[in-house]
Image (tube, rainbow, N blue to C red; front, side, top):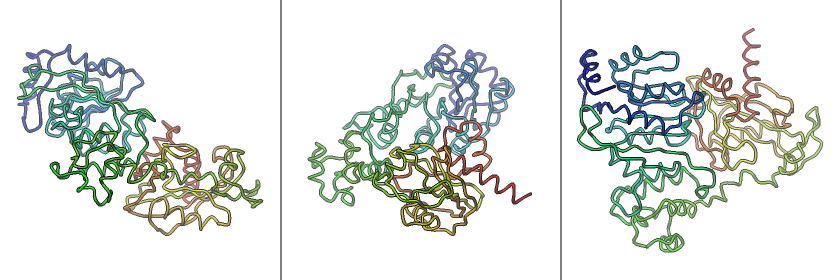
Length: 449
């Protein structure tokens, strides 16, 4: 779309660019094609586009065969896009990206985020879409140059701070090029930059408690000119010793610590090794026969290593809206790490009964208590990992305190979304949960018959 065509279309749809909405439309077609090429899109990809405007990036992206969900705040532009492009592979959502329910993307697998982000919400978008449990696996973003500098800033610089550290702890940031203000209409007052964010590979950074890392970083930068040791005294009583171990100055401010030093500090407060206590190989389980009769006991490593039949519980926790709480298993789990699972689950230890285990696991994994009702019993099979599973149901609104050794994240999901997600991408879930989901569905069917 040339500049003259853009001006004509804006007149026809009666849109006068609004500065407060960050409406600066890209009209350089070669640049738009180059941007889309950097995402290496294919027909297997699902793209979330934020702020499509008149479709400068949407058009070349669709040409690659992808499916796109585009979020546009201006209703007139949303209608224009719906009329301009074939709806088979493009859904245009009229709304504010900050209000978008990110959960609806999970059934579509790894998502590529594409956008010419409005300057006034770019930081909020980055933190909203790229933190914690997110389905986004690649982000290609046009940002205000100042924001891009903050993402790529080095320790000690004025641009180095919370945003860069939080994003860089999960993503590698590539500053691809500076974009002149002259390729936009109307012309913004500052230049832009195009960046690519790629999730870090496992082992690329030292293991650490990600939630604690975020807490420490935010606290450390809460008063930028104050020494970090004083701000973190609650977490690090002996800062001089900690500073020596980190290779930092005692008088250091938050901006003086590198990403690796912040991670090292996190591990001083809570060593990564302590996160693995939930996978104690010496933990002893009840071993049972094909009829779930106890025939002995054995340590975890022997039970799992030899596929011995044993017992487990799964718990489905619902909120008042009828949504089901799912947990993303910790990356330290010995089985099915980082897959989605029941609200809480665990093995029946030697000397325990199912009901005792259910109450214990709910408290240990989620930090809450609730009335639990047994609703199904699953036989040991390959799908359940040779576990006899007693499935329980309960209700709780939270807040939850997930055990970091067990759980990466927790989130309530609508039931219809979970059903679609399992149908599309069952490999995202621990097999035991899928078996429990089907058993629960069968219970509902029988109850309503």
